[in-house]
Length: 149
Image 1 (tube, rainbow, N blue to C red):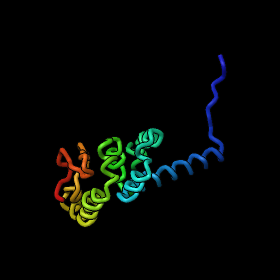
Image 2: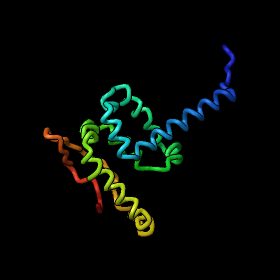
Image 3: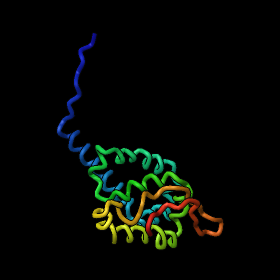
Image 4: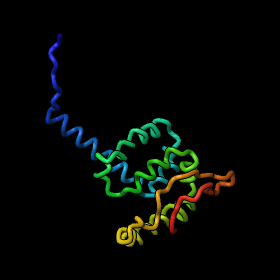
């Protein structure tokens, strides 16, 4: 029988892992910015299967062990929504960003403290559901996704 060896990372490996984690965390949190999402969509990154696989990989931040490091929890909701092709298409529309995502985010920021006090969690509920992009470039939701805005 071969002797079992435990893998103890070297200080260099630990540092590389920490840099990688911090870089991935920073990127995931950038997803909370609707205009950054719009930029990614406009540049075609959200059509790239390799990039979409990377977003799938980053879902580990939704686990409590890692989510505790996230300062902008909305990024985790957007990370989920980015799995939907219709949402990715809607992100190309600047009106969708301005009228929908940015407005929701502003509403959440304006009332988040109230939600903490009265236990409702703020103005915006968990945003999920079906997103439709009509052929004329406009967008429509097929299911209500926002509470109170």
